[in-house]
Amino acid sequence: MESERYSLSFTSASLLHRESLIVAELFLQLKDWKQVRAKVIDQNLLQVRTLNTSKRFFREVASRLRTLSSAELELLVNGTLHEQRYLLWLAICRRYRFIGDFAAEVLRENFISLKTFLSYEDFDAFFNRKAEWREELEQIKPATQVKLRRTLFQMMREADLLTPENLISPALLSPDLLQAIPKEHYQDLFFFPAFESDLKQWAY
Image 1 (tube, rainbow, N blue to C red):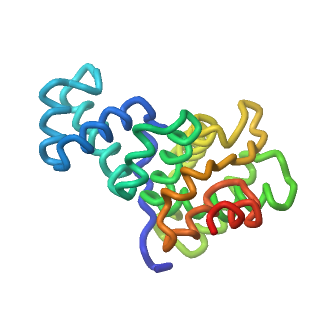
Image 2: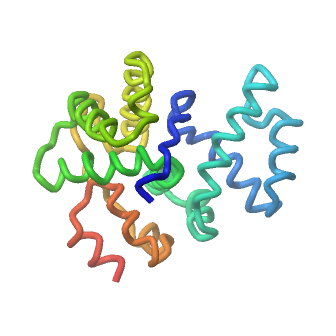
């Protein structure tokens, strides 16, 4: 729903690749998020310095991984590095609608329009356009907006969707990844810089 408020609590961490694999593998073993949380925190499996940081990182990772299906979680743990990074990007886009909208409306649209460079101005234009209709964005301070932009671009680089020079990298989605995504979530493929014709030839 358009009235759903954007959650913007993603500035404290980027892709969290290592941490996500630890938590996902443990969840596949235990099948219980409470047990996973207890073990992660009690044994400091995320290898952080403080208890509060451990709790914060686990909360962030778990909130993303909960958006993935069983098949997607299995592939996250057992797949290739590219598949893992793409699945983590998928989870982030599902968890944070702001990022999902940016991915579909800016990242992918630039790609299919043959605009290979993604600029900070692209982000600012998207942010300002959304802020006209969303009070939660109107209230954001300029410094926070910069932090949101910096974190999002770092996520895209870590997900292999953007080069260090901010050039868009086409998403090479494997057949296994496309098969893992539930058919009813086909629209989620638009979070990736890829042509729809390339997606359909694998997905159907």
